[in-house]
Amino acid sequence: MLDKAAEIHRQMLVGGEWVDSANGETIAVENPGNRTTLGHVPRGDAEDVDRAARAAATAFESWSKVTPRDRGRMLLKIAEDIETRTEEAARLIAAETGNALRTQARPEAALAADIFRYFGGLASELKGETLPLGEQVLSYSRREPIGVVGAIIPWNAPVSLASLKIAPALCAGNTIVLKAAEDAPLGVLMIAEICQAHLPPSVLNVLTGYGEDCGAALAAHPAVRKLSFTGSTDVGKLIMEAASHRIVPVSLELGGKSPSIVYPDANEDWAVEGIISAMRFTRQSQSCTAGSRLFLHGDIFDSFLEKLVEKTSTLKLGDPLDEETDMGAIISEKQFNRVCGYVEEGVQREDARLVMGGMPPTSGPLSKGYFALPTVFADASNDWRLAREEIFGPVLVAIRWEDEREAIRMANESHYGLAAFVWSRDIGCALRTAHAVEAGWVQVNQGAGQVLGQSYGGTKQSGIGREFSLEGMLDSFTQKKSVTVNLGLPGPELP
Ligand code: NAI
Ligand code: MG
Image (cartoon, rainbow, N blue to C red):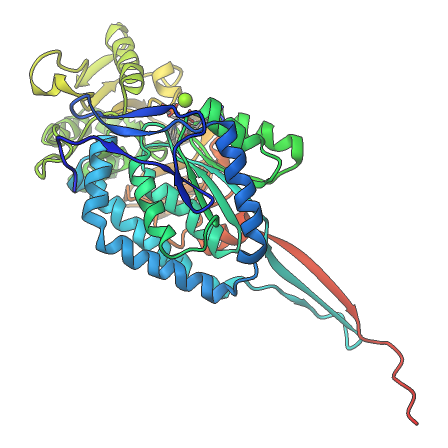
């Protein structure tokens, strides 16, 4: 359990050993709910990346030959162990990310166990195909592992995102070097510890360090044969560039600025609650799928916003570890200042109407941490920076529409294409719009999170590839080999 007095010191997992960084330097991990130092982790750099990647490359030879069912069995045991420690994991996540224990951290820890269980059960599905080329030819394909996977994850859902890389990569027979985000490495290292108890050494390597000195070295390492990245679109471009030098396949799960389109007939409480959920306010909206552009029909613009403000105002902000808290703190000072910058800009605009929220309090308990208020700007323009850029904070912009085509045009006027939400009781109309919106995932009349089995991922600059599903594992973590055999050799001469 978390001991308030004692700082946590953790090491990285390299080649089956728990190690400090080669340079001996560390990174402090801050609790964003009260700005205290929670602990330290190694500041890994290129030298550590090299050790980890070489170890993973060596381990690949034997790991790739373990039968898939046996690999799956190990993942199932990991799932069980995570489940027995979900409360510990959840408290660690809440402390290091600022995500509220009840609404976010606990469900995240539970999801991590589910992810290992789901992929562990899919080990038998790494199947190939045969081609019907006639009696004289056997032509079949194999789903082979790629090799060493280099994975880089962000801090917003660190434990479930780490699990989403580790479980499918290992199930498919790859080995992996995963770099945790510098702002949230502790929960990931705990998952690594649980995994290591069930895996051969060097199959899983977990590094902690900054993007520039550790992440970039991983993306560029010659032993890495596949790159899987979740994070900002800007860094996604760097990963793709690094991959281009060696023609390494990449999966990218990047940012979003997802539209919610509300029709007049959805001017009801269930839709308001759905919008709050879609906006991920209880994750401080630090979610790539946050429905942060709210397109409201003109007829219901004011009455819908009134209900939205009333319901959103009931969210309780505060200590992430308090059971009563609905909404915790922003991850870091850097992100907090970024979010505040957008809010300040909105407040200063004469053509914007601040409907709720605004700049965070400078005194009282909330000023002790990085607490941003749920903020809504009305009569926003789709051209504003606030309506175009991923804020990654609880700032919602409400934009008016009258004509359906205009709403769809505005929704699609974005370089992102991750998620979208459509709200109407008229399902025909909702589906027409769902099909017209450019996004990898559209939800109608709900604002839920991803579920296992769903192939999740983005279009446009929101990314390449799919995760969360069997298809995602096969496409992202295996490569196909065709084998063609001539069965038509002349028979042996009979005596
Ligand atoms: P980031 O994209 O910089 O960080 C994500 C991961 O990439 C971290 O592990 C980081 O260490 C690593 N990284 C950073 N620079 C790298 C480089 N040059 N080479 C290799 N790895 C590198 O995101 P950051 O700075 O934490 O957040 C900035 C913005 O990114 C947010 O405001 C948000 O808009 C977006 N973001 C989106 C996420 C999503 O899930 N869509 C997740 C996190 C951030
Ligand atoms: Mg960064």
